[in-house]
Amino acid sequence: MPLLSKPLWKHVFGLAIAGGLVFAVAGCGEPMASTQANDAPVTKSSDTKSGDTEKTAKTETASTSKKTTPLLTHNRYELKMDSSPFNKLTEAEAYVILHKGTEPPGDGGYTLTKDPGTYICKRCNTPLYHAKDKFISHCGWPSFDDEIEGAVKRQRDADGRRIEIVCANCDGHLGHVFHGERLTPKNERHCVNSISMKFIPEGKEMPKPIKASDVKKAEKATESKAAKKETAAE
Image (cartoon, rainbow, N blue to C red; front, side, top):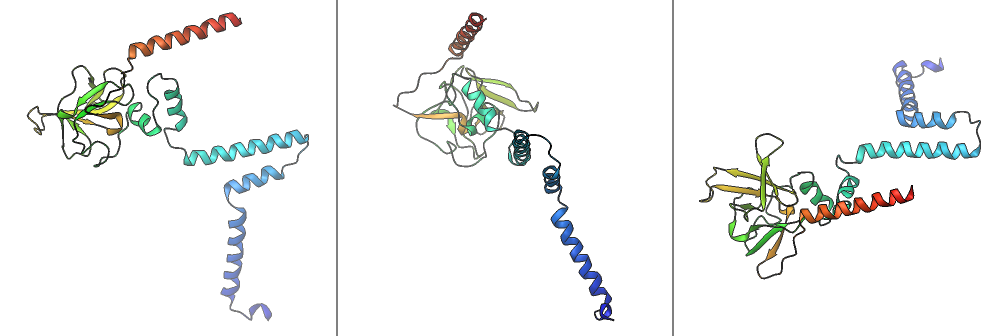
């Protein structure tokens, strides 16, 4: 009895392993779909074959991008930055300034900076804060208990609880303002993202602010030129 020369459970176990290997190789969703697509009968010309290959490549690329692409993509930032006459922003800067993000807390950036000078808006160069109004709050972000008059605008945050602060000129997101903490005699703390500002040391020439009114004029002029070209083309 050759079949029973080994215990019966060993035969069953071996068959189970063999079946599992076959399923592992042929049972994955995406490879199976790809194999079926390639095995389908082809009755069109070679151009159609190349088109089918192209579609398959696009499908695989789209599937991969869904897994790896962040919610706010580089292209979205690039479109906004390229269409704006304000200072060009990096992806990280755009995330905070344009999309109201928050950089991680820590002692980096301008959090612990004590040098005399002026902090200006990263997007439009508008002076926002004097270094004399900066203090160390140990909150993880640069803190000021006063702003340059008329430079900062307050508005209710999307969460309905906090007060957001933005540049009064370009509406770039700065951070939030808090009252009643008694950290300074002024009893006010502007919690500002370092990435929203640029520090200009005392004695160094500051860049000219880019006024929002000038930006709007330039945008209108560009739109007018484009409209004239379309009319002439018709």
